[in-house]
Length: 243
Ligand SMILES: Nc1ncnc2c1ncn2[C@@H]1O[C@@H]2COP(=O)(O)O[C@H]2[C@H]1O
Image (cartoon, rainbow, N blue to C red):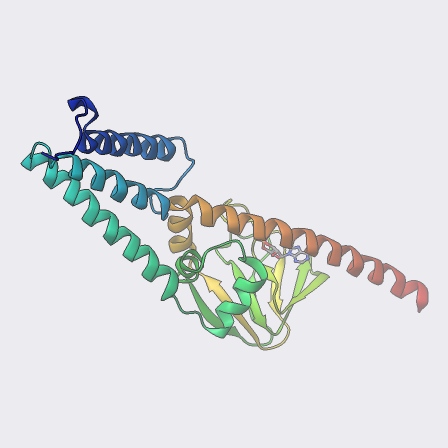
């Protein structure tokens, strides 16, 4: 029991007050977690738990309780492990130049460890001139990012656009199980980051943040494609008139 040079009522003993403060922190942290204000795998929640557990543990100096102490020590240890894991996954992730090219353009809102998870579902593939990446009308599981080269987009056998470096292909029907809206043919040796559909779908189902970031990237990109497609149509319409 803590002793003080002056008399204070037992109910406001420092250790008790610290314990009550710790209990308050536990409740506050859990409330914020359940309300979605903080994330369980972020930094704030484990820090709150460590502080709360430390306070409750300190309050037990008044009256030792083995089971209570074990729980507090376990909370502290697990939270430290969680913080360490978060730190390592944030600071030890590495990307290849190709992956960095994709992240810089389309995944800026993702944290490095989230981008790493997403890119773990992709591999680099090369296509020769004339290779078909996607066939119109067929259900495709192709989702790729063009690292270099050139592809031609055809609809009903007619060229409607061209896509090259830094563009996404297969995004219009990805995850929808619908037939591809166009045929995509490599018209130069083309290198792409191609996502493994099954692994990617599994990851997106588990991780809403990555799913949102990828959908946002597809949305922005589709907008750009629409503008470039409009330009392509205008150019094609002008050509016979100029001839
Ligand atoms: N007008 C267009 N301009 C550029 N790319 C297109 C156009 N229409 C379709 N595509 C691409 O061709 C792909 C065919 O498969 P998806 O429909 O899944 O996704 C499509 C787009 O990535």
